[in-house]
Length: 70
Image (cartoon, rainbow, N blue to C red; front, side, top):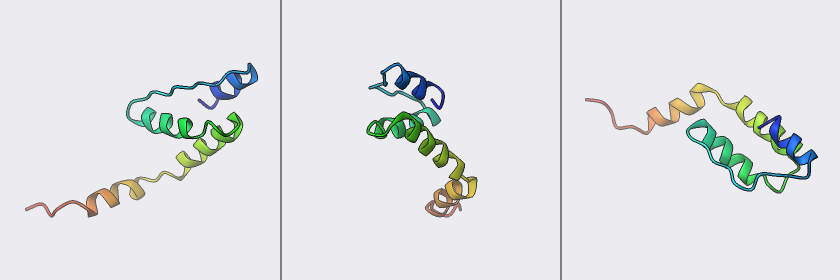
């Protein structure tokens, strides 16, 4: 997406439907919600979001909400 969106925008085009599975669904949601931004800003924001992802920030909240295993 980081290469595709700017290339499409240079041609005067922009996807209006985004589809993805698993991590692709996260990307699709982000880019669909960023339609109001220029492609370069949307791409930079998406890359920044992924650079912030850390395993402990995802797994720990999930594990702390589970019932104790007995």
